[in-house]
Image (tube, rainbow over all chains, first blue to last red; front, side, top):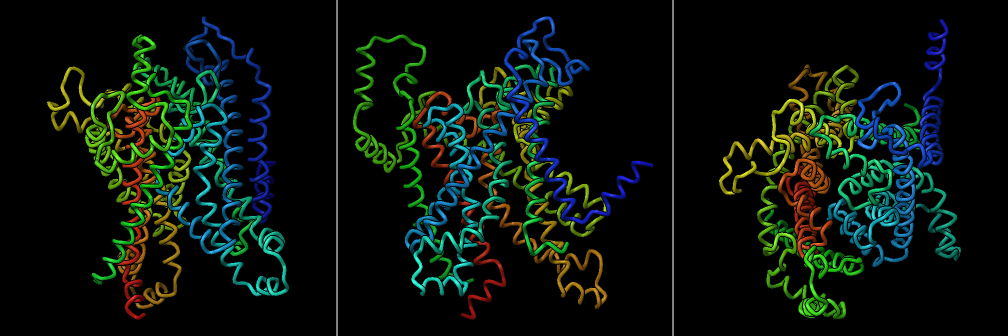
Length: 282
Length: 329
């Protein structure tokens, strides 16, 4: 009885409320994971050799690894780290994209330079860019964040450039110019407010890619150091134990990463629906 | 076909390519030079050597020379087609590249083809039956596969088909105890299937999603309504008005995906220990084989550039609408 009433409420909500609900719920999950990962002390990950290589059970729902550590705790800790790296990396990407967009507005030559830069970065395989940059920064957390950051700004910059070009044709821009307003003033007062939603949305859409690439380079061995509890590390360790049939070592951490990325995709898609006025009527 | 404009297009692309390769080599060289990699150390490896010998090696390789001299030397050698010697394989880099790139291209091309065809078919099916369970199943598949880490899917497939079921070998490009030249076609195919399937599974998602959205868009157009009013329906309608409109954009997208394809190949090759260019790149990066890494960056850039250029050419020369627009100018 109660359940049917609940579904009734859910159906009665309009898309906007539903979208907001989905966004806030999923955002809550992510924040909970990050906060929770701060409270996981190293002590709860102590080695416990009698309990090693245990398949999943009620006590250890993700099983235990070859040192008897609880895989669920390790996975949660790793997810927290991944989300943080993803957040920093997408912010770095967004900053680069915004700077380049506004630089490209200054004159024609800078514009073609930025265009060329986009082409350049789109032509080197992402993974190789990340590997190169993280090698040159000596690896580690900082290296990975910067490496992922400098390889994901191209798509957002493309979107922002197109947007800016369109806004540039509006009459009030020309009016402002003939009133003698400075370039900086026009950028701040006319352009920034209009592209702000695109910038926020862009950051969130970069997020899942950033997390995925962080996990990939860490898996390959270029990212975080082996003692760090990252998902990539857990999965590359699990490769050694595949032949022994310890399937849970790889299955659950990867699945959790997939779910996190899926959640981010969901948030991004719903936000886009919410912020895109052309689809508001759907 | 307008040969003059095609020639113009090609020469323009060629100039861009040269500029691109120069820029990529400069940037990657600078990045490597900034890194804490010590080429002498990675060459020596575990062998113990006296400081005098180290000094000799450093002098021989010009480790302590200024970066401009190093850069000019390296670029000069590149122009002569000399990519240096790989530190980990101890053979000329160009040999490693040609052998590995062939293996990788086979892998990438087969999965590119499979994912393109399957993705297009799935996309058309989903778009045709918008809102039905087929559409929903394709959508769920795409959403999940787009969010799945490549190497995790590879690990799962490796676990299920190689470790548990034992259908495929667990790794290595050639069977143990055999020389690479003596491998039979089927032994080699055996090792290609699983990596190719992994890459295809992931590639399907993007193209299917795109095709579906495109077809749904096309089907909501007025001329479809008109065609329906004329009595066309079912597969014939889709074939005459749908497919013709979406096949070119889908093909273009598939050519633009070379970048992702290469990234996926690196990860998949690593998991399956498939002896391709990606595995070589990872080995070169981890064991500081600078000449090999730089060469791989250059060649993979060339590969991605070709994909992008083909996509561009498709738009400019094959699309009948754009061709018409040009001639009316």
